[in-house]
Length: 227
Image 1 (cartoon, rainbow, N blue to C red):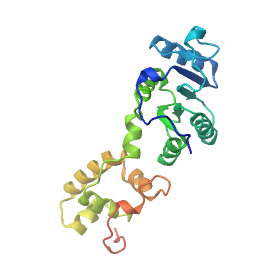
Image 2: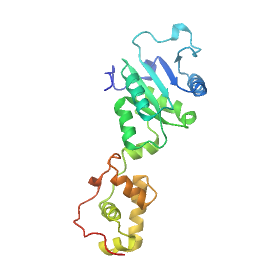
Image 3: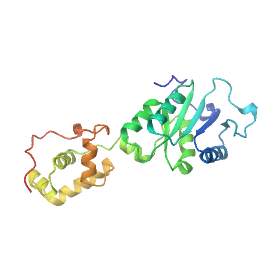
Image 4: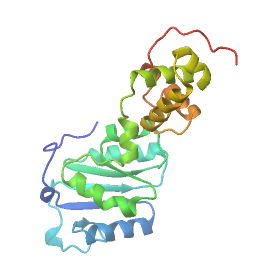
């Protein structure tokens, strides 16, 4: 659980310093360069800020964690950093992180997330958003953590996809054209950020991804018909 902060939102001027923690020296140097060039005061031995501008004890600080370690180590680092009084945290996470890991990072105290390999483009905007009191997530992660609502018909069709029905069998079951099934499937794939029937079914059936069979209506349908 993160330590209580002075307020849920705050003006950027209250973040008097940014501290960068990275396990790769070249990543650390580049992050410090990008943030310093954007006007942030970067605390620490690599900072060019004069001593007078360094944060007083207890002042809010924004901690940037750019680590390449495993998930558990990253979550532990987020929790430790967020536990410091007044600290706000931006953390890098694996590009293929699942919903559970991303939720765990937010619960641990991350206020912003940058995907591995994208910090050169995303670091400064993410830190700026967090400094303005916003939760900052990449668009793809926002869609996965808070997916768009599925329509009732899309849920019907996905329920049959999970049961192994083909498009033709789904069309026969629901008394619609096969082209209609394909249209609804395409829309559902976009909302779930998936590209195929197998990906959508795996996502729905994965207990760690936060969808579960609860997104599907219960129709009391017969078992999969023979092909």
